[in-house]
Amino acid sequence: MHRFGAASVFLAGLAAGQSCGTLPATISFSGNAIKLPDPFTFLNGSKVTTEAEWRCRREEISAIIQRYELGPMPAAPEVKASVSGTRLSITVTANGKTLTMTPTIRLPSSGQGPFPALIALGGASIPVPASVALITYNNEEIAATDPRGKGKYFDLYGTSSTTGGLVAWAWGASRIVDALEQLGPETTKIDAKRVAITGCSRNGKGAMVAGAFDNRIRLTIPQEGGSGAMGCWRIVGEMKRNGTKTEDAAQIVNGDQWFATEFSKYVKALDKLPHDHHMLAAMIAPRPFLVIENSGIDYLGPISSYGCATAARMVYEALGATDTMGFSQVAHGSSHCQLPSNQNADVAAFFNRFLLGQNAVDTKIWKPDAKLSLDLKRYVDWTAPKLV
Ligand SMILES: *[C@@H]1O[C@H](CO)[C@@H](O)[C@H](O)[C@H]1NC(C)=O
Ligand SMILES: *[C@@H]1O[C@H](CO)[C@@H](O)[C@H](O)[C@H]1NC(C)=O
Picture 1: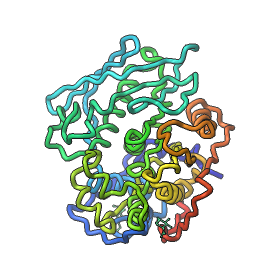
Picture 2: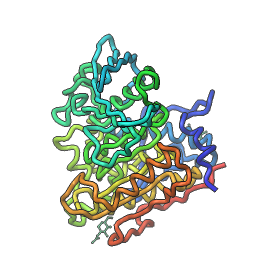
Picture 3: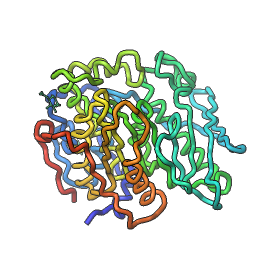
């Protein structure tokens, strides 16, 4: 039986008083350009066999991903929030500098609350249940896709910060959760313990990073994020090499400032990368996670998302959470970010069970595009332990 009930302790990250080793100053990882690194082996070669070790490995994975790909996530800053009508006003102070974010809130039209809420980077392009509040946030204002260093985040942390846009966007989402916690349901009518996050395309990448870095986010729904979200760099790299028109790591770092400057060193040396995106997903585990993909667009790397999600699911299984991760992939051509109606029920199931408390709803959703054939052994040469 799955242990999701008990595994909810994972929501808080490390156990009380637990400490883990820190990353060494230099790492020389030598892996493989196609095989995904084993999420259950520490950098020092030790195997993860217990839940306590997994919590440390998750910290290690977080540190690796920040160092190699996304850039450092700053410590939680000071936040002061207020709400006026449909606007939240969030003033953040760090390094003696201050910024204000003003996301909009749309409350359900009936009922008293407290309501669960969906935070949408840019805007929601999935159906939002009538009883869920929608908080929309302008993430491009926090960090511009281009040029690097433009946006409110960099006013606070310095225009020479090497952090990429995805971390800045995730940082912004976390400040919204800070504000909801600080104001409380009396003021916001929102229950800060039932918060989901979504975004599509580049904002799907941002939503996944936000879910990975903030344990308070209960449900993460990246939509059509492709490479940079549920796609693995190694798998999409192979697609590119064998002639598919898709977006691989070498291409994605040109023009779009979503990643740390450091990542450019590895886009053509993927064997040196101690992680891949199955491990970004592993940071979300065992919290509820629904991946929405569109296999009608080669650019999104359909087999890469499918293979990478399948590897990530092995982590969910190891944590005893087999039905908190879902994968829904439909080919609908060029209508990017327009959810086809045959994915509506998948989205609704995750909201109903994990935000609206309908515990009996079936969330065993694993629907890759049936036209794709996945040879998992090509990418995965490790097995998932039964954690004790
Ligand atoms: C490897 O690193 C982990 C995490 O820091 C630690 O718990 C473990 O004891 C280390 N193993 C060895 C053999 O040093
Ligand atoms: C190209 O690479 C992808 C990803 O590994 C794989 O699924 C596909 O079978 C490969 N195609 C060919 C023709 O080798």
